[in-house]
Length: 260
Image 1: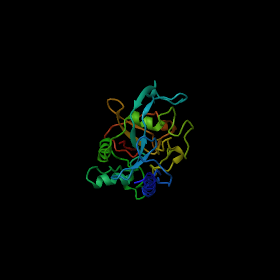
Image 2: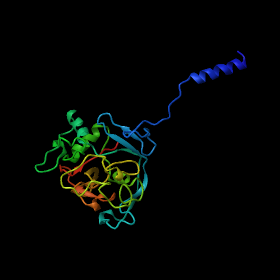
Image 3: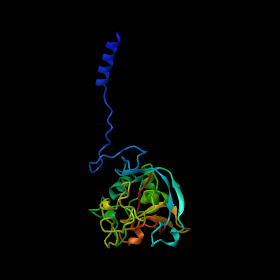
Image 4: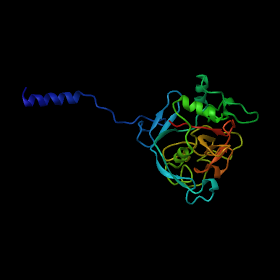
């Protein structure tokens, strides 16, 4: 075969070969989002629960009080250098509809009803609200069911701060009704409805709506919860704020999100 004929044949084969797409998949709002680990803010779906998870690159940050935060408590001082490894974390808290799938699978216990409380499991219009009124062991069971676990307190704070020095998930500006759901009297609200309060990597409701269980202990009696809740006040919404709860508590202001 002559050199000229070989060159022509190679050009024809190259033109016929399929071209791999480099476009990112469309997100829920139609925007292109990456779907592979290694890209901060990458999003992937979980088939079992239907929840979305966001990739966080990991890194070093200061755990605890942020410079300029006048509301820091003694248990947030002094700040401690901390390093976390890369991980995927729920874009939102686990919802009622997601948790109900685990109950239907026979793995999770049903959310416990509280007389006079605001347990979302009984609300006809609360399927996209965070599941609440579940104990920490029940939360752990759900996370294990989807191949994950509860975040450590350090991971939860790193995620809320986006690995930076910021007082709130959205930055250092004070809380507002558009950034977080707090100071309410009648229970939580639908997840992801306060997008102005999203973190740099797109995490929703890292402050307000429901406290979230972590895998860490606060002291010999209590486990650590993070994020503040619908019934709380602005100081509770700070990324470094630490809350306490006994792991058997099933209250209407505590929910959870998982990491994978």
